[in-house]
Image 1 (cartoon, helix red, strand yellow):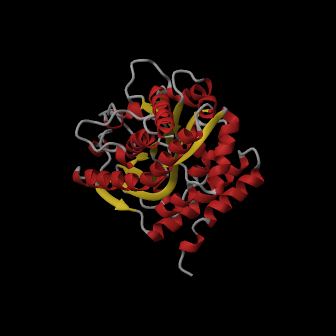
Image 2 (cartoon, rainbow, N blue to C red):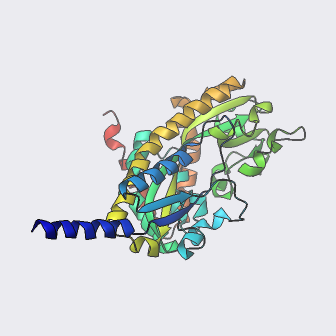
Length: 348
């Protein structure tokens, strides 16, 4: 009897040892961190997920993340379609504007829809988040693993103080693409342009010939874009938007994995979701300190100011998102469900 068990054990262990490791390559939309700078939080989360996938699948899955700077010419703006086609990558993690076939993801752009990090944490895995996942899966033919918290603070960099919505009037502004057009229905900037991240990293916004009065962007980009050289004021606006990255994997690759492997990937991803809140907070504090050290006059929007900003901007973007959706009534209902996620956090 003992001999039979021993032989069975040898066959089992030999079979496991012979199992080939599966490599899943993930597209990466983030550039490499600057020398000496704190790495951006979402790449840190991606690396954590990669490490945990290896751990929770006993090394059966090797999750490889492409570097930020690539000589291979891969266009990451196509990454959802590339994942669906198994074209060089089998997985990716992308923001809402990479998913134009699902306009409902722009719910994340509604100003002050979310009220803080705990509200954002409750969104991940909620019914509205699952609804968006299903729409993305249907539109792009992929398997969505879920959503990672990425950003909640808008940095308003300006040559003169911006404290009220009216302070944008008559200014030349960089930031926010056409998706945000409705928010300027009442307050009219002199001109709006859109300089992308990579171009801004060359210093074009602060070049001697620059005529920008205001730059709207992400706080952690201020240092790399050298914004302090021109924009002597920074106003930080909490929860003006709440950006989540959607992580997805090729559907056939996912279906070809064992239950054990899929469970390991999902377990790793859930840990990444939890870490994304803390990592984002780390980056925010680091960026605030860096911004202040560079000599700008720093202001965090007060509660009273936030009420006025929400009154001016919230409904315009909310109504636009609903109007542009496939099913306005369903989208309106999901927005209400997102609002309700925070109800029991409020003082009564």
